Length: 114
Length: 110
Image (cartoon, rainbow over the protein chains, first blue to last red):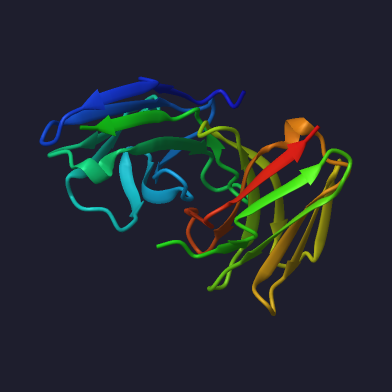
């Protein structure tokens, strides 16, 4: 167990709806990264939050947004859901500034868009 | 887009045999990491190798890195049925984001 938790475990939404996914980082970590993993593929970087600000973003549209709170937990929000948003969403926490910056992953949230 | 490519895409072996997976990447890196994923669940970090290292061991795992060829390999020795999973390599460049390959699905038959 990494100490990183995500909620909910599974979620079913319909096209056009909005969704919020949550992540609690490992104790002592100040950085949260979000990844999207489509079925049969490797995870793709969505964005990273460090000290409550976005600190890098992958190739995802603006309808993917996030927040990081003072306790370093984080939310991923997706608006106007599309069928292709169906995926496993993974968050990873880390401690910025240390060598290698190892990231610890949560169990993921499985989102299905109908 | 994915930076890395892994081969094979799928590998099926018998318990006790060794499993070798390869990963290639495109840009310069600070380090390369290998992860395991069981049945679409969270990723488990296995081993990290820095760009100035050529080989690293951890238990039954052996990782090599050839920066001139932009490639890495993961060897699992004396495999067990519990090693059945998807294995991903991920590179870290100038930032701290991980760029993953497509993964290798390993099946170890008892």
